[in-house]
Length: 92
Image 1 (cartoon, rainbow, N blue to C red):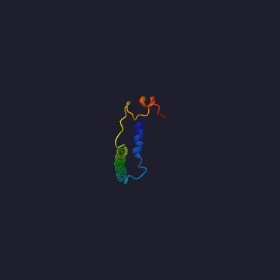
Image 2 (image 1 turned 30 degrees about the vertical axis):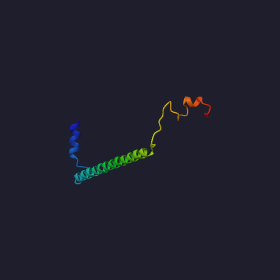
Image 3 (image 1 turned 180 degrees about the horizontal axis):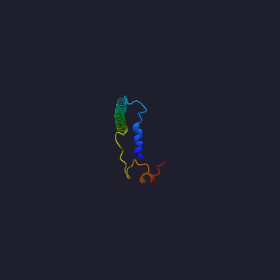
Image 4 (image 1 turned 90 degrees about the vertical axis):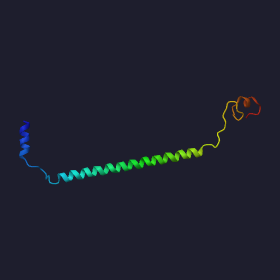
């Protein structure tokens, strides 16, 4: 059964010309390679922009931090809810 199909296909000629087949294959390979190169360049650009954004964000956060952090302690007099300030009569 399959042998008959193979013989029938062999007896027929090609239904389209094959003279440009190899050139078409190489053109398609070249276009896929170009797409791959573009994708690689886009990935490099995205990683670079992400690195720049991260660096700028880190520098902005570093610049925005307070110059000297206040001491936060339970027994500090500057703590608004300190028991010693709540017991006094001068609390709001």
